Image 1 (spheres, helix red, strand yellow):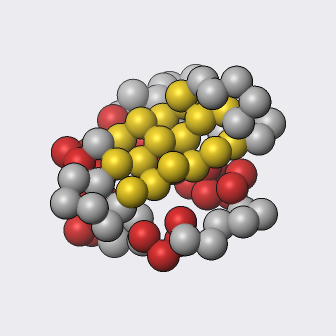
Image 2: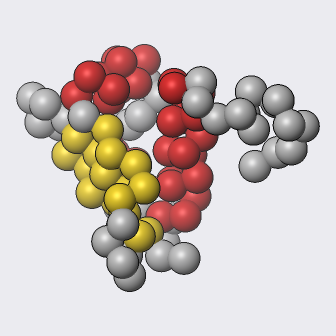
Length: 85
């Protein structure tokens, strides 16, 4: 699976989007309200997105884990089914 990461993290209103490269399906889309606390806390570093050539899958995995932590919406991360990602 190939991913495309579009990150505009140094703008006044930062935005980050992860899509499937072949289909364009949006897998993750964060706007300023979600991103700014992560940027302020150092969970996201804009430099990581400048030259992620060849590291997209690792970066996408980390973004999905952050999404689970932030939203508490991932039952697997909360341990309710005993499985790991």
